[in-house]
Image (cartoon, rainbow, N blue to C red):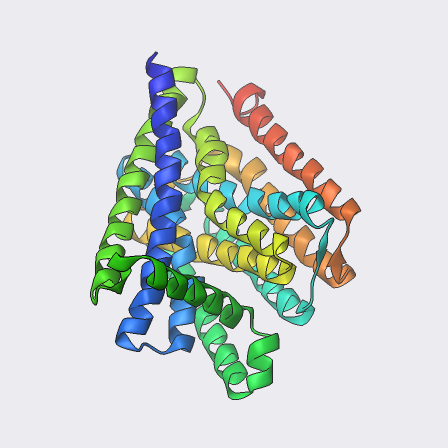
Amino acid sequence: MDILFWFSVFLVGLWLLMRAAGTLVHAAVQTMHHYHISSSAFGIIVLASLTALPETFVAVTAALAGTESLSYGSLLGSNTVNLPIVIGLALFINGGIKIHNIIWTRRHGLFLSFAVIIASITLFDQQLTRLDGFLLLMVFALYLYSIFISEWEHAKVKKEMKTESWLWRRLHHHIEIVKKKKRHTPYLRLRHSSIVLLILGTGGLLIASNILVYSANFLSHAFGISELYVGLIGLGLGTALPEVAASLTAVKNGQASLGLSNIIGDNIATILLALGITGLIHPIDIEPVSLFVDIPLLIGVTVSFTLLLFVRPHITRTISFLSLLIFAGIIFAYTYFHCFSSLFCT
């Protein structure tokens, strides 16, 4: 009975996490309109930073609660599974993904591989120290700067801003949502409703993170499985759901490149921003199994995806199907090495 209760609590936490993340992004867009914040600077903050907040809140909460394996496991799991999920499920939506802005996607795909390799090197000594966290945050700051320069150049040329910049297109999508809700939702017309929603969204993330961490910790002990496995599978998949859902919606609406770029940007922010903040606030120890299984899987999936971008300009049905098999293989590897292998499990 206790297991069923805590499993229900875990699901409620996931739902609250997704709702709070959506509210926070919506409130940030509304704040831009109220206080006339620059769209270019704001787009960077929203799309390259806020998207990683669910993972960041969960990871930091888990680290502070003493469940370090849940903390970094959720980040590794999220970054490993969301690319295969989006590419694989595209098979059932549009039969594949045709990448229009292939040059941008390749460039940021390369940076994603670079970010994953840098993060893996910092974990090689089986520790995530404050120095490691600071290094990752500095790399993320350089990434934000590069995006700002790119977006500023796009903004100077109106045609490019409309056709090339996925950040502008996604920001405008959120702006249109805000405008529609303003017309149909009376309370959103309040002058300071954006501040209220920002507070509610942040508070929701904080509450949801605590619910997820404590329920996941209970379930791991109840089923006799490692916290790291629960972090990789349960929290990893759970925190990836908001971005996966957004990307699949973009693919369904004919904006496949936007959906794919969304996942790339989220992965970069997660592995640099979320892991960096976690290490800076609370240094954590890395289990040996992660060095031989979890991190190589993350590197393999990321680098393979980057190479794919340079080999083919679009993702076919065959590649989507193979991605589903890769996702199944990742789940099998996690389950085998964390639950059944005598090399790592006691």
